[in-house]
Figure 1 (cartoon, rainbow, N blue to C red):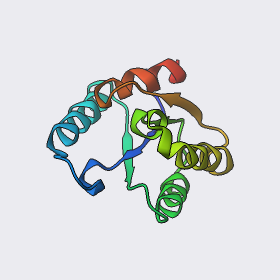
Figure 2 (figure 1 turned 90 degrees about the vertical axis):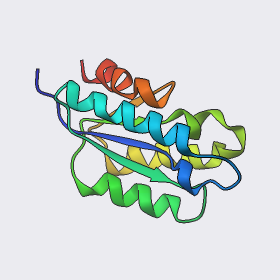
Figure 3 (figure 1 turned 30 degrees about the horizontal axis):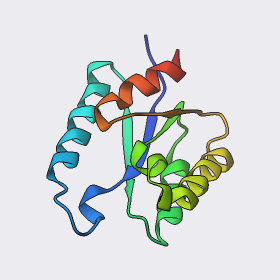
Figure 4 (figure 1 turned 180 degrees about the vertical axis):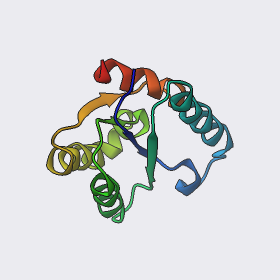
Length: 119
């Protein structure tokens, strides 16, 4: 079954100071590889929680038409990032109106979240 492309928006673990990003980077890579296993094109938009995030997300959303946008748990689950999460959801609403929106639990179940919305 062919599906349109998916955009995954999440926090860039390499751009968050004060901790070892390696385990999360590896989990993101494993999760992203699962898209290919399902024959789905997927782009990543990984941002830092800084003023450039809105511009980076808007640029990614307008690069091509997406069938689904998955917003990562790092943006949703960390209460200090609530405002950034709201910005991301509103950017998806504004720039990818035809895209379904999905939410993952971990970097490795991102394709499962997309598949729920892609049908």
